[in-house]
Length: 516
Ligand code: GLN
Image (cartoon, rainbow, N blue to C red; front, side, top):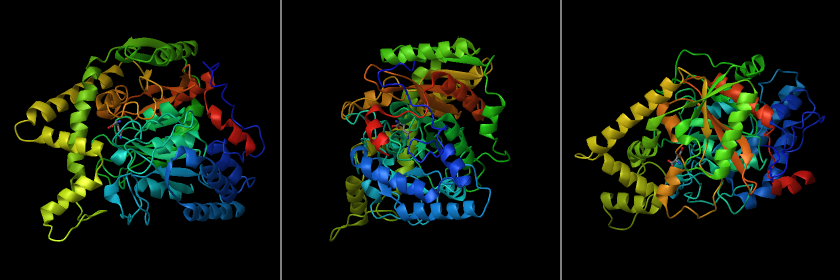
């Protein structure tokens, strides 16, 4: 698996005395800061230098928050010098998807319609990240309102894949994925409604985790499809991703869908307690085993299956027949919810307003929305509104709800006989910029493996499992039962240790890396 044309992945730099390079993991960086061997301010400054060197090409950031980051870093340095025991990730930098609110800063959702909007408050996850001492570097690009799979629907910029600048980074959290892959930051946050964190993680050769619905607060996340949205971490190793989920998880009275009365488990401790996965029951999802997939993606799933067997796991095929309805049902339910959630952008309360002399209120709504929303967002609002309209409601929305119930039932039932399920994260590796722009249905189909997870509300993780002939990374998706994140991380950490595919450096960035 690791003898790929992209070159062997670099091993972690844990032997080196001070991991000041951009390649260090978040946990390594934080440990050195705690021990006084490294200053958080230096780490943040290095990150901004790296961003200055690379982001003209990558275009991952919508906004940099330099003074915010340096203030937070200086505070961490003071506390480290005073001998305080710091939170686990203190001093490790992070980037935030630009559909999460940070007080006093614009939230653009990469849409024109939010031009001029400044958030008066922090999202709960942002508050938690700040309380844990992670300096925030900036806000990252996304498909407008998180609708898309390539980040090309952004009204602000085109983000490029660090493995090949002619290719998409995946989406909708493409900015958050690209800046982690390019080692501008070890960590970032995205949101995942139908695959928007796992699919870009796969395309960029990093780790992305969609937590159980309700585990992470959505307060301050701009809503797309509220029954599916979940804030989700990116990192370059499984342990970094687990540590970040630990920071952002937990009950929040400000989110009515937040799961109450349950302390957040210690995911890192769960990995260390049982690193070996002998006897773990692994199901391979039959409907996603090869058919319709790029040949190298199918082959790497086969190799992953063998890797699990070699580690002593008991691997068996599992059939989830209703998966074939997932994409169709998703594009009814998600667009229906979006058409309602996006009704609030009418030029009155948030962002831009188009006004001309003599214009009445209705005309102002029309002009503002016509100019403010991009074509994909308009397509979805119209689709969703149509599906909810009287006379069509039962035929579309009602039927899609039934399909969702079936998918949820079959997936949850599968965990009666296995501990985790595996499948490719996406049917292909990163495609070329523009390749699918004029074919929305083919774009939609790239989410076939990720959408069922959101519909069932269960957790899933994508991590690198190989490369295609062009040297582009391939992602493996692991699915676990409701609140089964500890099992998910254990299995992923075991696979990562065996494959050696962790903390990867995209080939073309190696030169920049060496210069640091
Ligand atoms: N690509 C899917 C869509 O376009 C999923 C997006 C997401 O998870 N935010 O809706």
